[in-house]
Length: 220
Ligand code: SF4
Image (tube, rainbow, N blue to C red; front, side, top):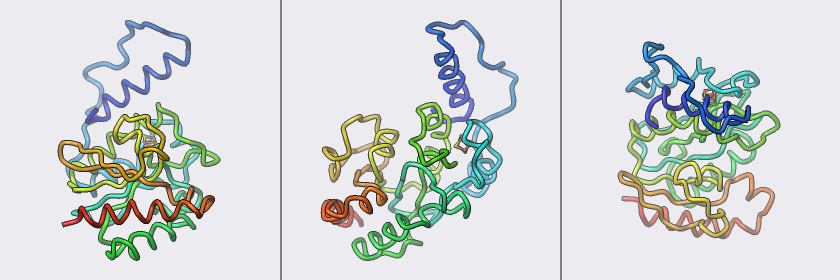
């Protein structure tokens, strides 16, 4: 699913399924629809995301939270979705969980937060901080895939089970899979707990510390 046309098709199929359709011969859009291919630079991709209304999260967001950091980062961190602080500032991981993520990066990996790239599975805040629906996640996923294609990270740290699932398709719980290495063609995914989970469960911080030591050992 590398372009928005495929994402739009998937979204429309989810909507038809919610309406009770099991089979459809409806043509979801015409071939001469607008070109929905994604631009080839991060700046242009961000501009496109900032105007995106492909899913219902656009109706309640304040700001699109595209992501930020080094455009050639070796390591990318991917969370689930923006929260309230991120929604109001347009920046990823700026609340309490953001402070913890920054400490994790700077104290364990010994690099500046500016040296990595940070983003989420969906770029707009789900109301009430609920988990994004599959329709929302798959509709937004082409932006993430394009970010990965342009930044070319060697390592992607999946923060939490939702991020891990949408990056790999593996439904294993985060408690079982954290710290393991999931090889993709051009990069490696390492899952660990989401910082907001660590704020609620401080005893799990030692596990994330171990996971990040593994990330550090894989850094060039
Ligand atoms: S969450 Fe993603 S697909 Fe949905 S409106 Fe925001 S940018 Fe577009």
